[in-house]
Structure formats: C-alpha cells, structure tokens
Length: 243
Image (cartoon, rainbow, N blue to C red):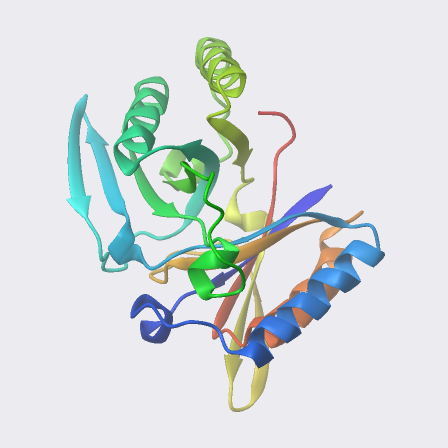
C-alpha cells in the first residue's frame, strides 16, 4: 500500500520565506531514514500560492484565478506532476484533464527546486520547471466513485501522450478521506483524528509518499513527519493503484 503524508502551509511560507538550515537538516534526516527503511517513494515541496493559479471548471466553462489563494475547499483527491516550459503550458494540460473529469477545481503551483531556496545555483541548461496540478475532492471522489471505463481510457491516453513528450512525471489518485488521518500540533501535543474530513481550508505545503503495509504502519512515519516539518496540520491519505 502507498500513503501520502502532506503538511499544510501558513502565512510564513505563503510570504515566500526560505526554510532555515535547521529545518532543511531535520527534513533531510527524515528523508534519509525513509530511504534507509526502503519505504520512500517520493517527496516534494511547493512554492507559495502567489506563484500559481486556480482553475475552476463548471459546465464546460473554465475560470482562471491568479494566486495567492484563500483556503476554501482544500481537501485533495489527487494530483499530477508536470515538467513544462511555462505556467500557461501547465494550464493547458490541466484543462485537457478537466475535459475528461468534468466539473473540477485544480490548483497549479510550482514545485520547489533546490535553487529556489538557495541550496544550489540554478543549472544554466534548465529551461523547464515542475508544477503540481492538484485536484480537489468532490462528493463523488469522497464516496469512492471510480472513473468510468471511458474516462479511465481517455485519461490513460492523455497521460501516455504526455509521458512520451516528457511533460507528465506522475499522477496519483487518493482514496476517500474516510480512510485517512489528520494530525494537529498544539501546546498539548499532537492530536490525531480519523477521517472522513468534512473540510480542510489549509493549502498543501509539501509531502512525502511512503510504502507501508497498513495505515497503522504509515502512522508512525506521519508522527515523525509533523515534527520534522514543524507543521500545524498534517494529513495521511491512502493512494490508489494505477494512473
């Protein structure tokens, strides 16, 4: 089984703050422990929402809102990672995805690269950047309603095409939040709440994807993660298999 452990952002990171050497060291240590345990499948951070856009698709009509975003329905149902030359190209790809999915809200934000936070100089040959296209939950996705065979076939064709051109890096779908857990930091320690989550108004700041035989096994990594990233809120969500 695969699980996504994601932490939420705050005003500090939304203002474009750079992580401290101490925070980088803590996160690096955890990533190293995950890798050593052979459970790490992915890990990324995201830039502030002021660098992104929100796409809302209703009845075939697309509305584009430039960031920064105000947290509304921030419960995710899945995401795609793209490597493109511009934000406009990422918008075009997400629009094609929405034509398959129907009414949906998608946030697009740049993925944090080492040179964004001063860890290394930006390579001179890099002409593209990575973006996350984050799909928001709907009543259907929260009920576990699968894509129709026609939607699944069309989505696979879109992903296969984008993989051939190097645009598509990954796509993940989350199982309903009823199968997840939420962790909140407070002065009294960390409290844990089982899903479903009726709402989430905090934007994602970053995540790791881990392999674990059960939710309980993934739970121990989530407990370490919230301390490493010093976040107020962390969600643990199970991922589906396949594209």
